[in-house]
Image 1 (cartoon, rainbow, N blue to C red):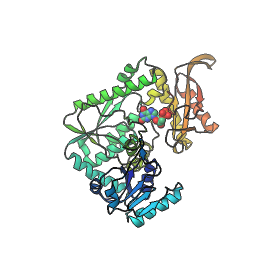
Image 2: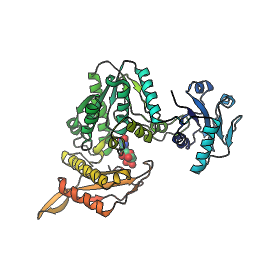
Image 3: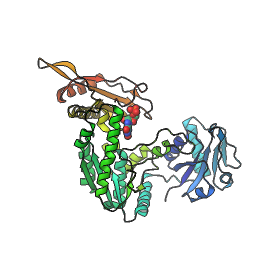
Image 4: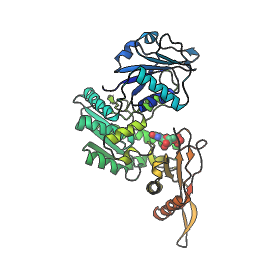
Length: 435
Ligand code: XMP
């Protein structure tokens, strides 16, 4: 392993993730570990150059104060401790600086002057370390990956192809709820350009028939999730001699799933998660990366920019944007209008600035007029939002001229649609998706 590491001990402080990010931005690798790690465990971690203990005001969990093992304070590691009863540390702060410039100065002084860490954390080193680790882990065994075409699974696929080539089999399940051109891009990039063993399963009809007449949003999600696992499992059973399952788990998934001291923010759900009775071992080469680092890794591995910089897309896909019971007619209207929206956002340069944008087709009709005749057709609702963490969101104030171009194209090119609306609701009280 090439990179030096700064370890952050987790006393439940919400700043820890941002601190790890800030240290990595300075070019030094950093990870968060449980507060009660032993010195022996710490000594086993590669290239630890220093430790940050940021208890702040809130190193109290369920009414009891929690402590870092005393042997860690007695060790030779340089320690930066904040407002915490330290017996020995090289640097002590009364409180963590809230100002980002001041924070950066404190971190720089600690990691470079006191810890003497090398700024050697970069994607080239990360990739070469992971290639070595994956090869060591799987030897000559075979690995299976559910390749959705999303950022994380695509980057895992590209990395594993570099590490183990045709020992990897990718399964791409098309549940019929993907965006226009998505399955084609997965086949083009992974099968044609990168020469991956790719099993493409077109299960569209199967999903649509399971979803027929189901209008409750939660029930639709459950059916899609359960059916996805079933299809993936069937494909996995057809393949012989597979020992490992690769997953695109990333660092926020692990942090958000809760450590010993941090509260669970949300439990991690991955469509196509591990079927319980298939006894695979896991390969998770991105488990230490933040999302922007995953993207940088994908670019370094040569994946196309539009695959790596895609906007978020929910696992149940267009199924959540075709409101009520899904019909082929309205699903096509969502898919076609979404393709037009994406194209026109790209033309206007909005694809680089707006966080998420999509169309929705509700399950009611209204009266319109076309070629002097009455129509009775569906509306398309456009939604475009900005957010930092998807917890709260504000709407994008799109230029009327851009909205007009999009509206005219949708009304002209998308069948069964006679109206276009723009959703002005922030989150809360709305959600980002419209289901
Ligand atoms: P909401 O609608 O809850 O969405 O405000 C927040 C963000 O999460 C995305 N989303 C999902 N992502 N699987 C995912 O991977 C899902 O089931 C799912 N549902 C919503 C949504 O697109 C938005 O970015």
